[in-house]
Amino acid sequence: MAIQNFLFASLLIFSSIESNHGATEVSLFSNLENSLEVTAKPMKDGVVLEAGKDMVRITWMLKSTAKVDGDAAFRTVEVKLCYAPISQVDRPWRKTHNEISKDKSCLHKIVSKPYDKIPQSLNWTIERDISTGTYFVRAYGIGVNGQEVAYGQSTDAEKTTNLFGVEGISGRHTSLDVASICFSVFSFGSLLVFLVKEKRKVKLQQRK
Ligand SMILES: *[C@@H]1O[C@H](CO)[C@@H](O)[C@H](O)[C@H]1NC(C)=O
Image (cartoon, rainbow, N blue to C red):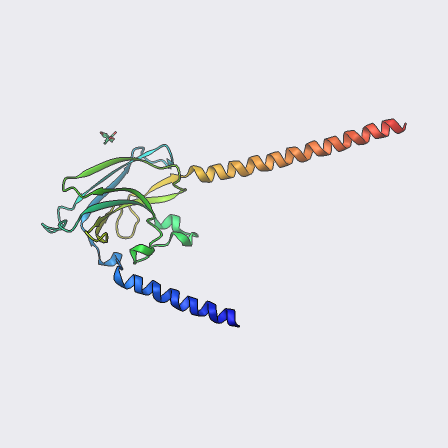
């Protein structure tokens, strides 16, 4: 009972720390202006890209429709790789969240650069640790205090257009590793069976 009370008290303290922390610097995605033009074009057409090998050409700039001073608050631009809804199916840990610090769908940072008014581009090789999934690219305009102030993404608001598929190598390695472990267990097993049989044969022959 005492332990339960202790756990409950800790939980209360912890959650109040959490909410205090949140109160000072919550950045809500729904509050951001969509003022960056972002594109992400695979350098191979119509195929699933291979992690560690294939490239995506990423560009970003202030939208022509944005306010004249729409980028006045930008200090840096953070470009991130985001899971599209297709790859979030059955994977609750990839969930999107309106509070940007809790968003698990855009965890992979591609690059963070000082903001420049001229259009930027980057030929990005999909990194080896990217797992199999469907992706788009999002760029955040970050203000002086490090908070997101605007964004742009290579897909539409529903995240259905211009997605690209990636086949991760880690997944493939895992299955290969599992296969080779199974195989070696199997062959070790067969070897044991063979040796035992041979030994028996030898014993039988000695008895004769
Ligand atoms: C990126 O790739 C494109 C197309 O191959 C090429 O024209 C461009 O010069 C490359 N940019 C950089 C920065 O490497």
